[in-house]
Length: 103
Image (cartoon, rainbow, N blue to C red; front, side, top):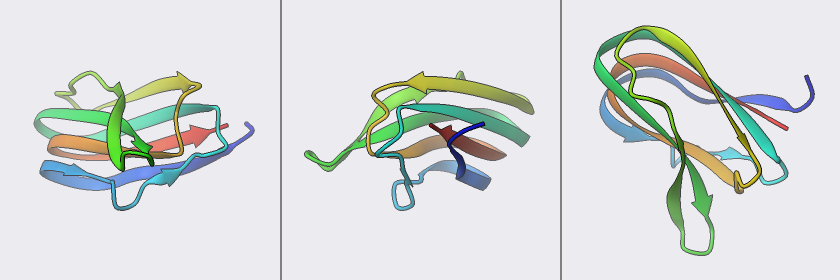
């Protein structure tokens, strides 16, 4: 598999948060595959993948995983238009890992 895999998030959450302070650099990538692995959850978990706009210094929604309510694994794919940096926003109580494979 060409490209590289990087970790967007790994840990436990209790409410809202984001990874804006530690984004993934994807400036020269054309596509991204996201791998979500939830190992514990209480209630709902919402995860939004975001891209950074350096002109406005703002984060914008790129993709959203369906709301998760159980321990599970999921995968998502985006081709073209992923921007220069990737981060996530999350809301929920869970333990999860989210990796991205960039090409």
